[in-house]
Length: 185
Ligand code: ZN
Image (cartoon, rainbow, N blue to C red; front, side, top):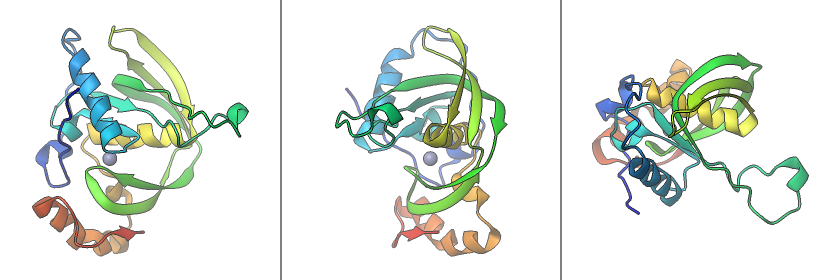
């Protein structure tokens, strides 16, 4: 296993729209490294440009954070690692608010309103195409990561007054990788 380093707010690769994956031949070890890095950083989603690669790939595993309703009371953590290649939102429904954080924007958390249910088209590592519907925390994480692939941060959704509150911290992250103090908005 090898760990990749997560780039932080301020790095220009987080502000670009990444390229579609067309060559599926050498992705396996990179995707394994993305999963290793996400677990190591205790994240539940990670986009390729967060580790400096300009490709439409994201990894996802909300295991331990959301139990299947049938499994409630069961101590076994639910784990479902999935890689999404070239994900595309084809439908979104509803609205809900949840607190978000980001490995590239450490120690800043904020309530963000997003769609509650989404249908995605995506490919796997063998180039099979799927259409699948996600809701709740899964949809939340996927929307956050797909935003990364389009050069967008969760903090972009904050009102101007809330954004003012984190301006200094964002500058500190860009300079040193971490803010002098954390904040929850
Ligand atoms: Zn993020």
